[in-house]
Image: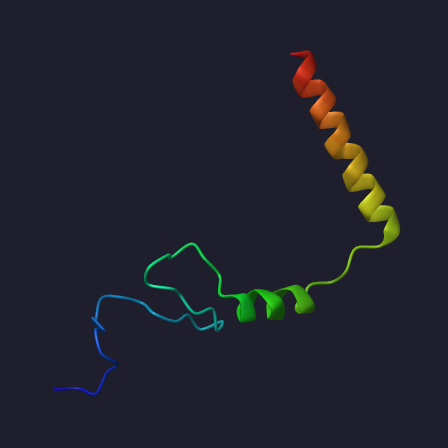
Length: 67
C-alpha cells in the first residue's frame, strides 16, 4: 500500500506541475490564493490598452444590437 491523502485515487489528478490546485467539488474553480498569484504575475495593461479594449467592447455591443 502506498502513502496517499485520504480519498486519493491514482487516476485522479489533484495538482498540476504549474502549481494550480484543483478543487475536487468544482474543477473549474481556481482557488483565490492561486488566482491572486496569477493576477500579480500578469503584466498590467497600459491606459491606452484599457481604453482600446473598452472601445472594442462598445463597438461589438453596438454591432450585436444592429443585427
